[in-house]
Length: 418
Image (cartoon, rainbow, N blue to C red):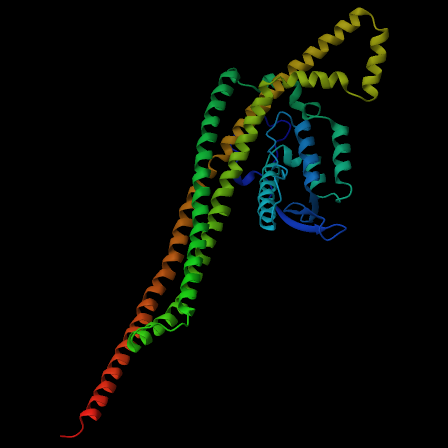
């Protein structure tokens, strides 16, 4: 669902109506020499269903034009470029590429679910144009229309749609959302630490199993009694068998860490980046964005601007005064339109907040599922452990009994018949 030109608020808009779904995947490309690689991203949207290839530079152009066209809207942030500090190994490269892919996935998800941005031509071009032409097509599309204020029917009457206490509401909402942002940051940090602990638990369990296997694979003879030596050999075989069980436990812990990362941390990051884009919007509104528009208006190139410059050179003072008044009126309308957009974006933020309940439910389900899977493996391990070492104990008893019998026979042979 997209906001029409006459729809002034998003009250009642549900999460299910917030647009399309999109998938961003990483594809490693080789260009020229084998060691020269660049990363491309395969994007598939539910709307177009046609995969397109994009490089990070394409995302940069797209993001920059969205900010210019929708300066009064929440434009989500892009993940940062890589900053090389020393030599990164291949594992670091993979981790970085996956982190950036996740960031691009969140960026595209927030764009395509935005009621205004999603229906714009820039988004349609980015999700459908060929790789070679996409940047030029995006720039040409922006040049033809300019920013949202120039095409919106509400821009001329923004003041009419605003509540009387808009400034008070805006200040209060901004404070509330800032507090929510801070709380979400803390929740995300905790969820990240839990996911990291699950991955560390997986590493520890895998190492534990490896150490058991190495201990059980040691074939060196020990200088002890034959009975004890045979019992230890039997137990060593049991240790090798048990090492596989700890490998299974390690897999379950690693899966739990991935599940917590994908289903909890990523959803919290999505909300955080939307809240960050709201903060950025408020900062743009407060930092004199109207002055920037005024400079842009004065420097605007094209036939209209050239004609105005020519007229200015021959106009009478009264005409120049009228033009200045029109400019002031335009800037005032921009101010009201900016407030109207901020009001709409605030409501959109609150539309997203019920996701917290869904994330909490996912978190609880993830913990239940993870503990159940781990508990099942531990539960299967316990009787195996008991059986294995019970067998080793029985073997030790049999060996001891055989040894005593053998010794008894030898004693009788020495004493002889009476």
